[in-house]
Amino acid sequence: MNFDALKVKNDCVNWIREFFEKNGKGCNAVLGISGGKDSSIVAALCVEALGKDRVIGVLMPCGVQHDIDCAYRVVNHLGIKHYVVNIQAAVEGVKSAIPEELTLSEMSIVNLPPRIRMSTLYAVSQSCNGRVANTCNLSEDWVGYSTRYGDSVGDFSPLSRLTVAEVKQIGYLLDLPRDLVDKIPIDGLCGKTDEDNLGFTYAELDRYIRTGEIEDLAKKEIIDRKHRMNLFKLELMPCFEPDLG
Image (spheres, rainbow, N blue to C red):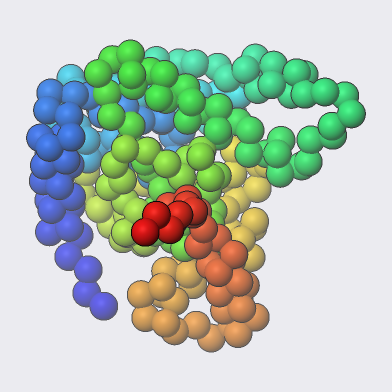
């Protein structure tokens, strides 16, 4: 499959402009900046679409973030306004407020920071005439590698129909340091790489998504299972439809 990165990049920039014309004329794009490729590329796309004066980055370490320097590099390189909100006190506040008789599950603890980060982004956005950018890509969404009501949401999503490989090709065309585009994604919640957590590589996943081809049947089963289990994250909340006839 041929992928015209320049055309898709330009189309995405125009799409962002059109979104803001229809859904927030004159508003700012607000996004969390982790220092990883996705947030860096979304920030750069928004700068190209709207201008750097209308893009606001929010750095949200939870205590000490080992690669926070990458996040600073992004906002300084693009010249965008940024705020730093350390969410550690908020996370610990929620955990300490839980009644003693309720033991939080491991996944509750893991998913709490991204959900607080999204609450923080919306607090900033609603205070500076903003619209929140989602920074997930298709590969992550396909296997549910995001937190529901955390990094999986937003007001607009430039990358959610593009695989990791395609996102990186677009990143190479933008005004970004190459090492940030090529940065190995690490789960900031548990310290492992994405691929360690998933059990397959993004290259294998991307190829399977676009062509349906994969040699390792065990990995195919893992991908298919994760996709089935996590489709609910991409769908609207089920609603009871009363019969009022």
